[in-house]
Amino acid sequence: MRGVPEQNAFGQYVGDVVPGWEPRPAPEPVTLQGSYVRVIPLSSVHYADLYDAVCGLEDGGLWTYRPIARPTSLADLWMHLAELVDSPVDLTFTLVPTEGERADRATGIASYMRIDPRTGQVEVAGVLFGRALQRTRAATEAIHLLMRHAFDDLGYRRFEWKCDSLNEPSRRAARRLGFVYEGRFRNHMVTQGRNRDTDWFSVTAEEWPQVSAAHRAWLDPANFDGDGRQLTRLSAL
Image (cartoon, one colour):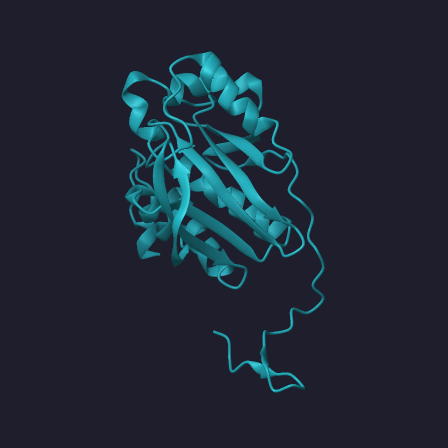
């Protein structure tokens, strides 16, 4: 918890000094290896697996809060993902579980967006979990790996999560993962022709050690029974 703010020579309150602060490196395409998932830079070799994972007839609900509706052909998904791969400012990864029915097949995506090395902040965005990845330890670990890379490897100070204010599963996921709710941007954007108010969440560098410890305790194999069911909920940690 921060103390009483300092006053400058003009009697104005100013923020705490950040000792030795320098701009941080921009994220590069790297593979992040976990116990249950690999986070791999997205490329066209993953598109067919992703189409199978997230574009089935029963998967329309996965796309409700995304910029486009469910692609109905591999070519449509290809065009959508190619835009992400070719982005000059964002970095998109595919999520490949190492266990379960989709082991070693791309089953979801997530991106680093709003990357600002100058101030050390980054957002995880565009998170899309195929149904086989939802509510699994691989899904939780994928986000943990992206957070760990930003904080521990790159030295960032702030990690953001944003979602449509009506996307209750995403709001619950943010809180479960240790993000703090910061507020709502009203009329923030238009998505698929509809208004979107956006809720903002974050984890700061000061909070990360405790959040990381909770993640690691939950992801420990000892926290799961022989059928892979959790023994202690992450929210309890």
